[in-house]
Image 1 (spheres, rainbow, N blue to C red):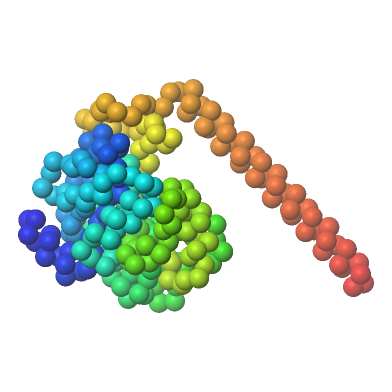
Image 2 (tube, rainbow, N blue to C red; image 1 turned 90 degrees about the vertical axis):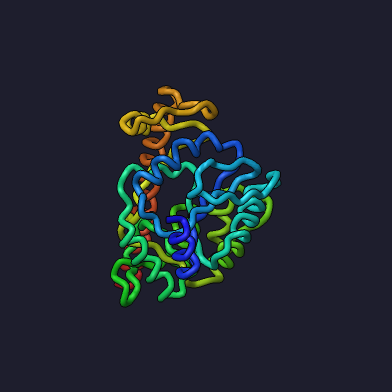
Length: 271
């Protein structure tokens, strides 16, 4: 089976990179059992990027980058070590609880090749509707979009991903600053449909409680390492999110009111 997978990866010129580090090695005990259960027919080589630790499974190929200087520098070393020009990116806490449709994933990769894309994110977030001509399931991310670059599950050209990196940056800085850097380039897309459905496992270095029931159903328990977020922390996060939505709603109303007043003033001048 591994020989067949290797052959397929080389033929398609694509592999899978799980971006991680040694301090998240406890998370692998959750990530990989779910990954292999819900994507048992994954057609490409799977590489795990870390510092010095490895995951004991013959289906997982280690890429060891040594000591962390910055997330971006480690990511550069991982991506540069891949034997394929293209790769499918995962973070180590992207938890899959739903079966992956391999046919759909391969179909999107073929579109990636036909478009000569730099990146195709496998979900439409935030939602936009500018469909690519000839590819009804694909939308193009517009230049100037604040999160045009996102570290979600996505197909990437290796050379383009490297261009989006700047040594010293963490993942959040890469998304913000990489989105600005990306404005010099075309070929950044996302799918309309969520192709590989996943949940975030951790936030702020702690396991999110909303996954616990699903993990219990899978017969998986949180390993020693990262703590579970408390109910109080979960409550505070929900309240902050609601307050943000209220603030955003008011802000939009204020902007609409200003625009409406301006239009009325313009119309009066015209009359």
